[in-house]
Each structure stands twice: as structure tokens, then as C-alpha cells.
Amino acid sequence: MADDCFRHPRLAAIYDPLDPDRSDLDAYLQMAQGFGAPRVLDIGCGTGVFALLLADCGVDVVGLDPAEASIDVARTKSGSDRVRWICGDATALPSLQVDLATMTANVAQAIVDPDTWQKTLQGAYEALRSGGHLIFETRDPARRAWEEWTRESSYRVTEIPGVGSVESWVQLIDVGWPLVTFRWTYVFAADGQVLTSDSTLRFRERNEVETDLAAHGYVVEDVRDAPDQPGREFVFLGRRP
Image 1 (spheres, rainbow, N blue to C red):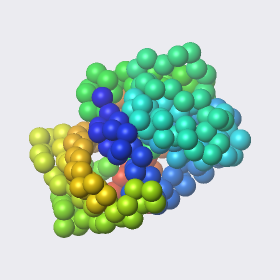
Image 2: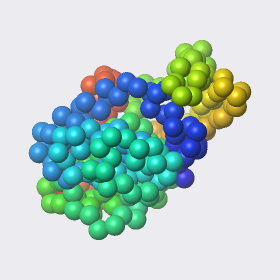
Image 3: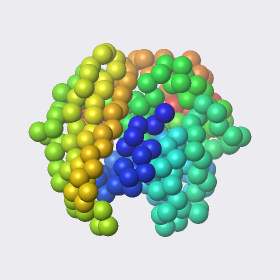
Image 4: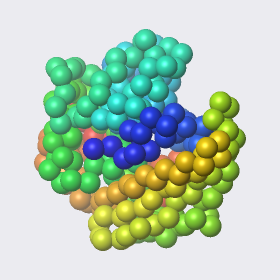
């Protein structure tokens, strides 16, 4: 099940204004263009930012996400009619044949259940044509990113047109290795409503991810440093032979 920040309609509607800098997607767009991938499956597409960037470049895109509220936001955006939106996950995909599958941002780490993770890798593999790629990122556990998830470092007030001021911050809740749980809090000035969203991420070691990919038949072509988070995240490139 998706976290409240993605499936609660009021929170899904402010997700993009609260995180407007998506320069992290530039590297993925460049890779998609470098592969010359005409068909892409965007797993965990959220509010559709990356799927729509691809569609703007003439790519045939399927945007997949389990949070209906996020898909609803994506459907309101300009150009959304050029994307096939599916509410669901990669463990039960319809028949697809794509050249590239992606999991941007924290999508891979948000799949915390080991069985679901394995089924996601398998689902993506089955959707790929021979020679197609799966690319995704995960945080390097050695960097202990969760130590920076504090109210003091994250508190901000954002003015959102049509919504008003929204206070937001994150706090670490629990570290039960390899799972890390944190809570986002949102305060809407317009009516004083306070909403929270708890999230859990699984931190996987590089060799663990490479082993999982190989077990599902992928050839691990590369493990890159994330351009927007140098030294902090791995970007995995797996290919279906």
C-alpha cells in the first residue's frame, strides 16, 4: 500500500509544489534517450512528472503506481492523454513489451517486503523486450542518510496557489535495520488541518541488489554514482539478455 503522502487526495495534490526541483530526473531522461527507448514503463510514477517528461520527447509511456490519488493528479496535467496510466504495481502487470523500465527517486527502497521486491524485479523483467533495460536508484546504506531526517533540517513553509501556506517537516521514527521509518507532518494554514504520512524504506547493500538482479536473469551492466547525489546513491542498470 502506498504511503498517505501519495494516496491521500489532499496530500497528493500538494506533492509537486512541495518538491518542485526534479533535476534528479535529468540523468534518467538522458539514459532513456541514450538507449533510444521508444517504449518505457515508469514503475512508481507518482504524480507523473517523469512519465510526462518522456511523453514530451515522443516516448510511448506507461505510468504505473498503486496510489490512485497520485494517478488522479497525473491525469490532470497537460499532455497526460499521451500516457497510459495504470493504478497497480509491477507484481501483476498487464501484457506489456517495453524497451526500458524505470524506478526513480525512492521507489525501489519503498518496496520493503522481500517477496514483493522479488516479484517487482520479475515483473519488470517479463515486461522488457530482449535487450531492454531496468534502471533504478537506491541510497548507499553506508552514508546513513536517515541521520539527517530531522525537523530542524527539514522544516519549511510553502505558499501553494489555491491552497495557502503549508508547513511541513520530517522526523525519524525508527531504525530497525534494514528498515528505516520516518514521518512527514503537514499543517494547512487555511483550516488548521494536520496530516501525517509515515514511510518505511529498505536499505539494501550494493552486492545484495546485484545478486537479486542476477537471480532474475538480468545482466548488471553498470552501477553508477547518482549525479544529483554523488557518493550517496547507486544507480543500477540491468539488461534483459
